[in-house]
Amino acid sequence: MKDKHHHHVDYDAEFINPSKDVVKQALIKDYDKIYKRSVEDREGFWAEEAKKLTWFKKWDKVLDDSKKPFYKWFTGGKFNIIANAIDRHLKNWRRNKLAIIWEGEPGDVKTMSYHALNREVSKFANVLKSMGVHKGEVVTIYMPQIPELPIAMLACAKIGAIHSVIYGGFSAEALAGRIEDAKSRTLITADGGFRRGNITDLKGIANEAMRRSATIEVCIVVKRTAQDVHMQGDRDFWYHDLMALPIANPKCETEVMDAEDPLFILYTSGTTGKPKGLMHSHGGYAVYTSTTHKYVFDIKDEDRWWCAADPGWITGHSYLVYSPLINGATLMMYEGAPNHPYPNRWWSMVEKYGITILYTSPTAIRGLMRFGESWPNRHDLTSLRLLGSVGEPINPEAWKWYHRVIGGGKCPIMDTWWQTETGGFVITPLPITALKPGSATKPFFGHEVAIVDEQGNQVADGEEGKLVLQAPWPGMARSIWGDPDRFKETYWKDYEKQGWYKAGDAARKDKDGYFWIIGRIDDVIKVSGYRLGTAEIESALITHYAVSESAVVGLPHEIKGNAIHCYVILRAGMTGNKALEEELKEHVSRELGPIAKPEHIEFVDSLPKTRSGKIMRRVLKARALGQDVGDISTLEE
Ligand code: WTA
Image (cartoon, rainbow, N blue to C red):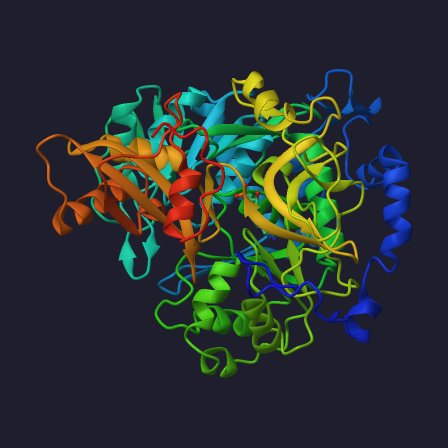
């Protein structure tokens, strides 16, 4: 069966079975049996997993669904994710196990045992307290991929502050908006970071953001590049100065939290220009991320786990920072670009550190595939046992290359489908699963997933429909920061009667019960796996003096998955030309961030709108792709 949008996808592909060796080691040997149990007794299944963690006080109730869709998990339980990610490992041999191996882009290396990590986190937790940070307050973190980033996150969690990490590739406007929404008074940042041989100007951008939103009173700055930066005397402090004070005591009690207390908010793009701060809890999130990580990636004590995502996104939160530490693993973290200085950078690190599991995005794979096989082939990659993929559908060509060239044909690929909102994996294989390249395969334990039409009727096998999650899970986002109505409206309104969660993705299920994700059905675009809202890009464009109106769509791109295509109506008297095109691209990059830099700007005289004035992006996209524009009866002209 061929499909016009995904012409490479082969739904009838032959299964790729795991090797005997992988099966022999697998923690889960019988998916069907455990899956059946997990959905028949969902609460029992999750309680059993939760028992494996450390609680200050056990929960009274596993699931409280009295205020749907605001589900609560492990209510009455006293908990802190740090008691699990750090404290419990200090009481056994893992104290001296490596927690973090970090390599900077210039080649500098830092390693930290659980013991050392605890000292850094405790010291910084005491620093934060001394700066007046208290339980329940939102601390904004805007940093490059350096060890101080997870240290800052963990220190916040330890004292019960709520972290809000803003990806370092975002610029002033995005940072300012997120600081303002959270009314954050503390910002942790760095002078800059190394990226593709260049130095990023994080502090300059942070200064601009603090000028635009005035809530920040304290700004702590890690010295990474030692470039000259402007420090404001009464507001800005160097991290290393504070860490050298007696107040930075390496002993700090972990705060006793309610299981449902917020751990972090993470902003993500939605349909409107205003990004939403998804809120995750200490208890349920810890149980969910550690369970999914352990079973899907078969985590063993001798593993060296590398999640090549940035901690600024949910993948980094859940699978670079929290779940590996809860599972007592050794994690790898790398600061810079995959192809710096040469396209073998990643492969040389896999070899050098003996990485056993690599988890990355299809965009990264496609980007490295472009350089050819000789780069990975000159390295010994035989330490690898499992591979992972996340963020966007992986096309079978990239899947097969990853499998054959990187995995030597013996490492199964865990294609994990999930979202910022889900906290962790939802549709994913296990190491024992028979795989089909391009399919995320089947639901994780406890999940019931369906493909439905507008009314909620299940569509036939092989038909496209909307992906819904039919039952709650412990890692689900609890709400949108400061806007519970939007939480209800966005995810739960369309299938309110059934009580289902709408994921916002289109997908199919084949005759074998395997799920195939097609992509977003809302105004969200995945560019290189990064999640961006068309409305955010439009808002950035409109702040340019030449722009009167704009519409943004995502169009297929060979490496990035999607690329940003902008239609712009200029103000009267302005003429569109090559120079203005470049200027507008730069403008968006400066305002919102380099990741949001448009691929194309097209000047137009009008935009297709509904009679109520809403831009029909669907029509623009169909036209650009030379497809049938579909039903345009609501079109104004
Ligand atoms: C997409 C990232 C296909 C999907 C963890 C989802 C995927 C959005 C996959 C969430 C996958 C994520 N296959 N598509 N394995 N994983 N997506 O919030 O469209 O940044 O809705 O979370 O990424 O993006 P987010």
